[in-house]
Length: 173
Image (cartoon, rainbow, N blue to C red):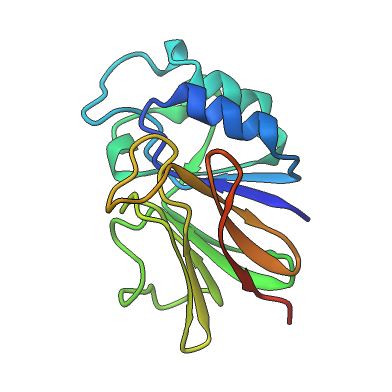
């Protein structure tokens, strides 16, 4: 199974469209912060929710700190705060990263932790746990590029928006 992982879109619909069009994937994980900071508009008119609806059968949506007051249910979507699921022979914990992350894990968690929030891409293995952050599609920080992650059965691949590989981590058991 090939999983596309994005985070911190912050209204960057063109970047989101680009990555959706350039990658073939079986599952889409969005780790929160779909809209701009302080957004209080109508999520039905933003286009981003239309893209999510298009991929609804493949979608796992995590609520980000900038999404706290949005009602995804009004557009037929559901967002989790945190969830741990089996993917590609691993137990994977998905959360936005504003409450949990490297050094601050929930009591129950997987062997792979997917977070966003910092806008800085990360892909490391530490004490038997893989920490992966796709960075941001539209507002990178820390001198990083606009980026996203791919999760295959053998590796996690961090890529720039242009599709260039930044880093790979072998995760095959």
